[in-house]
Image 1 (cartoon, rainbow, N blue to C red):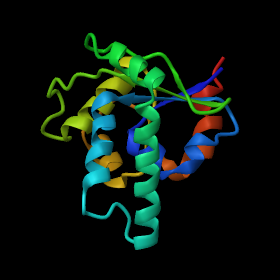
Image 2 (cartoon, rainbow, N blue to C red):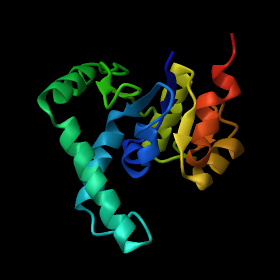
Image 3 (cartoon, helix red, strand yellow):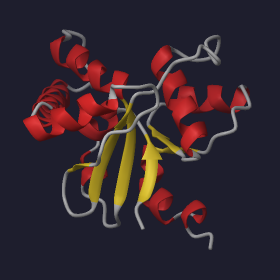
Image 4 (cartoon, rainbow, N blue to C red):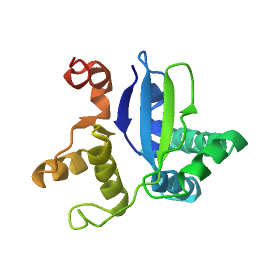
Length: 170
């Protein structure tokens, strides 16, 4: 059975290990985080501190955008946009990794704590009863401070997350 995580599209682009998981993994990604990839691609602001790393990440962002724009993948994404909370069919990356785009709706429920994409990630995690995977420690702390009822894993704990207790319950 696939392990599922809610995450942003940029996490998949930045962290290559997410696409080469030793166990079957499926990422649920809000559509607005896909749109954010275009902003990152066109931005003059660095995504990474090291210029070589930044160039590499921007190349990976461009590759991911190109992959999502392939006709079959684009068709899957467009179908998910027909109604709120609809999900695309899985977009396959390899034998172990797939991604589902969800047409999440920001209800401003957590607007005072989180930006719109963070809110969509939290609401998606709650709706789907799945953990969030992120590298943003500040956001993890804000989730805890706001007592949001979701599980959150830091990207550095990805190996633990795919083998973690949440997935080993009978």
